[in-house]
Image (tube, rainbow, N blue to C red; front, side, top):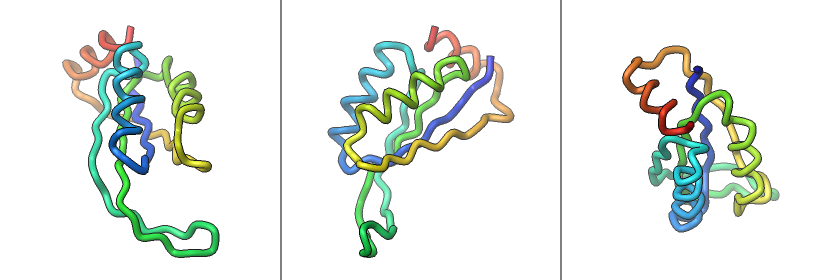
Length: 103
C-alpha cells in the first residue's frame, strides 16, 4: 500500500476542523495536520497578504481520488489548492498505522 499526502489551504480554522473530523471519522484519511501560515498571492488583480491554514491530509493511494473530490466539494474557496505529494519513503510502523486507520 502506498502513502499519499494531499495538501490544501483554508481561510479559517473552523472550515478545516469540520472537514478533517469527518474525513478521519469516515477513514478517508488517517490524520490531518493543521498549521497557521501567512500567504502572499495574486487574486483578481490584487496582491493578497493573508493568514490561512495549511492542511496536510495523510491517506493511501486507494483513497486519494475520493479524498480529492471531497475536498473540492466542501472547500470554501472558488479555486482550492489540492496538491498531491507522493511519499517515496516512509517508516514501516507509521505506514502500517496509516493503512489500518484508513481501512
